[in-house]
Amino acid sequence: MDMSCKNINGIYGFCNENVHNIIEKMGQGRFSDHYRGDDFFDGSEYRIFEGQDCIQYLQEYVPLHLTQIEYVLNRVIDASREFFTDTISIMDLGSGPATVPLAFCRFFIFSYKHKFKITTVEPSEGFNDMINIFKATNTNEFVQIVNNLKYKLFEDNFMNDESVFRRGYNWIIMANSISAIGKGRTFKQVNDILGKFIVNVLRYSEQVILTIIESSSQTYFKIPLYLSKIEKIGFNDLRIIKTVSPINGFKINVPEIMYCKFYKTKYSDHYSPYINSKSLLLKLR
Image 1 (cartoon, helix red, strand yellow):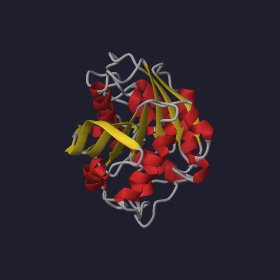
Image 2: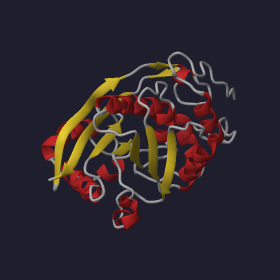
Image 3: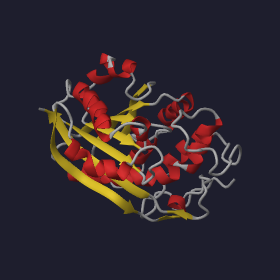
Image 4: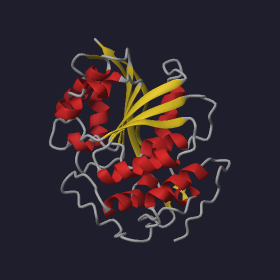
C-alpha cells in the first residue's frame, strides 16, 4: 500500500511529517493486512478493542475522528485564551490510539504558544501499545504524553485512585468515548458519573473545561439529544460557569483523507464527519 503523504506541512496543514510517521509506526506496516471493511463493529455491545481490531480501528476511524477532534480543540482554545495558561494540563479519557494527542500535533498554527501536557486513560493493551509508539516517535515539542493510565473509564479503581487526580488538570476531553458510559443509562445518570469524576478533579484545580466530542451516531447513546440537554440536567456539586464553543450537527468536508494516503478506510476518496460537541467550564459550587 502507498504510504506517501501529500501536502506535508502544506498551506492547509492537512498533513505533517511527524503525524505521518507516528501513524505509520502504529500500523507497523500492516495497513493492507487484516482489513475487513466496515463489518468488524456489529453495534451489539461496547467492547474494548484488542489485537488486529486496534489496527482496523486505526485504519477506519482515525481519519474521521482526527479532523473532527482537531476542529473542536482549535475552537475551544481560541475561545478560552483567558482561561488557559502557557502549559495546559489535559486528561484524555478513552484515548484509543492517542487520537487527541495526534490532533494537537496536527495544529499548524502555533501562535497560541501553549504546551500540551496530556494524561491518557485507555484500558486496551493494543491501544496502549500505540500510545507508547506515539511517545517514542513524536517530535512535536508542544505536545507530550506525560502519563498513560490503564483503566476502564469510571471504574472504582480509577475513581478512587488519588494519584489520578493529584497532577491537576485544566481540561478534560472525552472524544468519541462517552457512549461507553452512556449505553443503558439515562442522561442524568451520565451527568452524575461525570460530576463525581470532575469533583475529584477539582480537588486539585480551581476550574476545569469538560469537552465532549462525538459523531452523530446513536448506536449506544443519543448523543445529539444529550448534548443539547446537558446544561439543563446539570451536575451535582458543580456549577457551569459558561458554555465554550458548542458545535452541534456540524458537517465538515475534508477531501482525500486529509491529503494523506496512509489510511485505508471504507471511503474511497473523501469523508464528511459530523461533529456534535459541547464544552463546559466547571467549578465546585
